[in-house]
Image (tube, rainbow, N blue to C red):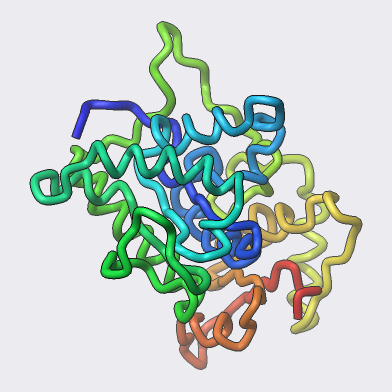
Length: 270
């Protein structure tokens, strides 16, 4: 495996029909690795839109991503944009000798989010079963694979190609909402956070309502949750997604004495 610095730790390539399912997985992975380390196309739409978007996407999957999660389904195989991405991933497969490069083969994780096959990938190719696994189960498998890969390449979590004078990390996640690990960079809403905490001391259920894009997810994840955890509360965040019952069942079991905060993001999906 060549010595290389990668901009993204994990990149997701998928058919549009599976967007909601893959987004739920990518959000969990992003919360662990960081908002700038996981490529999910709509989070970087401001950057990739343009006449040369197909070239940019191919560069991201082939050159700029340590690990690629690639869709294996009929919907993926039959769509032009997906094929542009697939050509770059196919080139990456060609460069990796799985029989000799035990580390390099970990860079591509095949996943099925729907029925069918992709040309050039045999039916015997082992894959992540995203059809039956919950988003949390799928994300945990991806994170375990990533951990094994980074361990084998020396634990390097390098960013984009180094500059002579590195710039400090940007405190804002761009188009993506703040995650639960970004509370230290979340500013300006202290009064709202305090109000939410006080309300939760008085009532068991609380609805956070506002226009799309007003920062509800960020307020809950990077504001409310860290504040509650400082007071020894345990917390979980879930999105109902396409199978709400399975998503709830995947949550860890809490003890009867535990103070537990459950944040349901995108509650309108129920």
